[in-house]
Length: 179
Length: 53
Image (tube, chains in turn yellow, orange):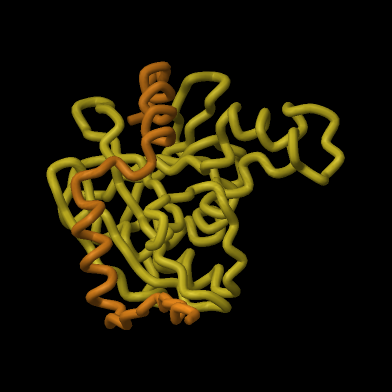
């Protein structure tokens, strides 16, 4: 999709792929992208895209923090660069993207410490910020991207997936590589 | 006579980035790295009715 990111170190197994790189901003942070199988839809395996920071001292992985390392676009481009790599190994399968801030747990925890004055968990201003970054990218580049990929949008409350409509709010995005 | 106090210094080793990433990759290769995310995605998928795919 793009090549203006960090170089990744990749591992592939039958359960998915993992990609590692170092974000070089005000700090050096090891970042991990992991595609993990989470189910099957219409005979296709579905792999969830996970992304987070790895603390090499403590060994802790964190997919909730915002590192503010000054290289957000480069990091995002690096994540995007792993998508074609994933499909090299899992040609016919599906990538599912859901932000770590899209869950009900997130809003319930967020409201406990957040400084923004949201009235309730239902009105959390921080919810879905991550999936919106992916959605905005797809919306902006939809005409080009659809030549290579087919997108579907997931609506959590309706328990459905539909053909992706640019501009519509989805809780998750599903990606299949075209034949 | 006062015993000489031992001072312990942490020794830092520098490794090239590629070596560091290989070490991390090797350490994490067979692990589910984001178990809660995977769990929530699995639950979500179970509830989905698929008509579009």
